[in-house]
Length: 290
Image (cartoon, rainbow, N blue to C red; front, side, top):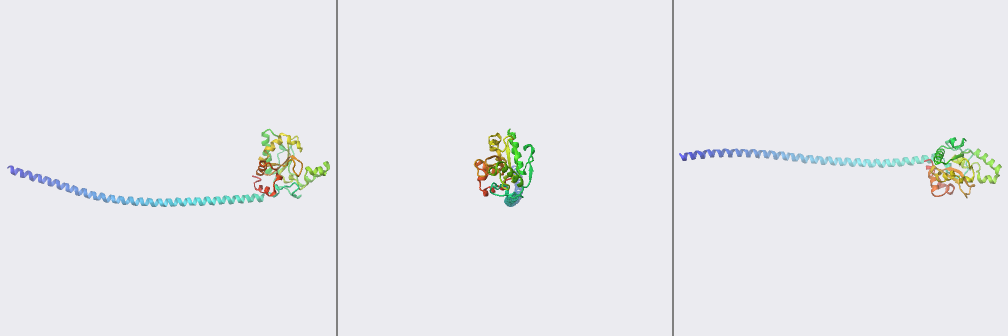
């Protein structure tokens, strides 16, 4: 009986272990199959990742190429814009050079002759509040700078009065004749230009005073003269006939508009308009009205 029991137990255990083995084998096969499937999926994903990286790299190269192209376009644009601005500047400079009257910076005192028909363009009347109610004219830009200068002086407590400005060929002729009859020809020649040789005919020149000392050398003792000496250049004006000049007597009241750049040059270098060579002066013409 015992033997039979043992045989039965053996058979039962054998069947159990066979079943377990079979189940384990089937599970292994299932796991192996699942592993193969996962491996296939991983390879597929890896290939997809590789393809994606290649695509990204390709797109990055395209992006870099596009960026480089855009940068080059930007450089070309900037170069063309710079060239355009330079060309426009040259055209404007040439235009200003042509438009600005050559006569305005000529050394007219006993050097150049203005004919009787010459008249400056764009004459404008100076505010009568600055002229003791007289009708005095200058070319427009000189008039603008003059009034700007007078108002700046006034804000500093200094009074500037305009006693004369533009004079025509005929007016200068009459004035010179009157001076010659009053003071004699020799004396008149020392302080008054003949018609055609006066800076006043250019429409850029004024005689200034403090309202009290008029057309006298004593004007240089006034507060107005002291202010003009230090500030006139800031508005483009310079005194034409200093002491010991070789053209006329000392005229501390006589100021000519030559443009801020030239007037400032003269001030900084302690020189006067007639000290300079005409060719050098002409180089300032293009910026005369800036």
